[in-house]
Image 1 (tube, rainbow, N blue to C red):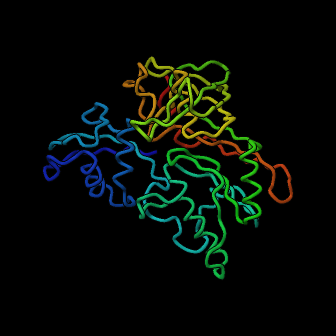
Image 2 (image 1 turned 120 degrees about the vertical axis):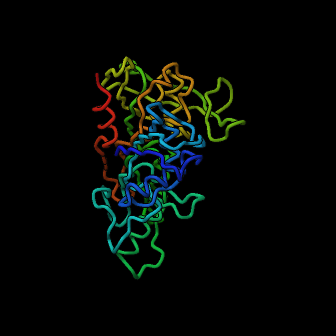
Length: 323
């Protein structure tokens, strides 16, 4: 995560905040890769921008000459530019494991897992296909299948299959809950030492992007949690928590923690009703990380487990928000 300072010039007077930030950064930091408007909007919505020393979450706000802006951005694979600048140039540190049947990758945020409506935006699936083609140019369309997904704002370990046989076996393991996953999150509040959250979830009719906890209907969901650490900054308590989802519903962890009263820091969809919402320290993205996955190899049946370390933006948030 990097911190940038901008002063609005006269030629940007009256421009929208998100557009002004992009244009100003192009001029003041020409070394940066191309920044998408979506990236800037997400940073603004996450509370990572300060306008004249006050947090601003309105991308459409009009700026004036002389306005001073501070914005925090993560520039690791956030742009539409491809990772693949040459043969086999996929970042080696992101590739946790590969054999003829599997690929296990540490996905950065906010890189989407699969193609989006924005055809210019890089995504993990396409980058891995390019990697496989670069390794074996004779295969024009190497097999690659997505077994599960991570939200674009979620970082961490994710699994792909490289053959139909492996894909069938891994899909069966996920369907029968034989795959074990662990996540890490930074939440607002001092969450209890351990517990479980069990509620039914269903998609909101009025806001289809959101999932809602319901008493009747919906799909059952269960998450186990344990607190790893807690600290206070500016009078606001935060906790680092380990999460073990027992089901795999959309936005399950985000909704569960918000429902319990401990929303994830940097969540643009959930937690806005929390009494401390306006005072939460800014984060460049949703602070949710897929830390570990365990499963059986689809061919040999050997037990496999892959783990990733705490992301840099988690460490930065903790170090800069301690009192």
